[in-house]
Length: 251
Image (tube, rainbow, N blue to C red; front, side, top):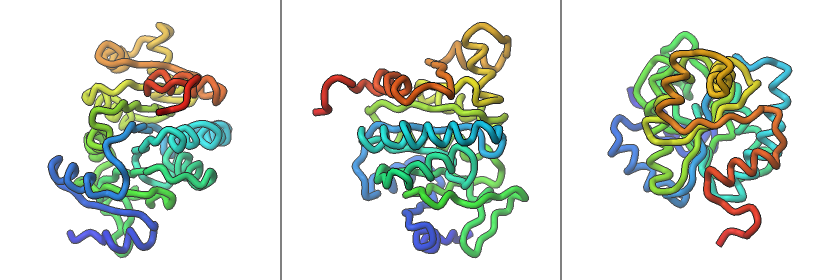
């Protein structure tokens, strides 16, 4: 299928590419109009499963801390690119602070509705309108994008630090976490945000037994922080993981 890349770019004021191989992905990323490599934040988790009372808290944390941190420290942010949940939170936050950091959504082409090309998946979603870039990858099922999402972050970061945030999430989020671990990426799970993130956090603390979470903890560098944390406490963790001093200006 010929994908409507020009129409996507015009409708969403973004750059869109379609790739079918890792070399092709690396080639197109190198041509994008932002500096690479650069430190990169991956955000995975809930699209529609976040409790209503938690949405305002998480949205405010993205506005007060996550987006400003990305803007101040030259991060790229990579996520699933659809107009729901955590992907909407970071898109709205970027727009709210009038950010210019690259925000890249990685989507399996059959799971999203594109201009004049509705998705083939019966649960196809819309693209989040504040993303600056989209990577369309092969697939018709939710989760087909998982290895591509992790690989896109690696291609952008290269030798620079990269970190994955896990907020809420369902079965596919486990796959996203495993793909990040495959890329040797540290993972921060937000306790209290629900579902996958909570299971991982509680298993890390020794309060719960979950075989999948235990295997992830054995393989990767997992950190837990409360979703109700203050922006300053989250900044301390981010500074540690990205190797940035909070007491001295960046060179």
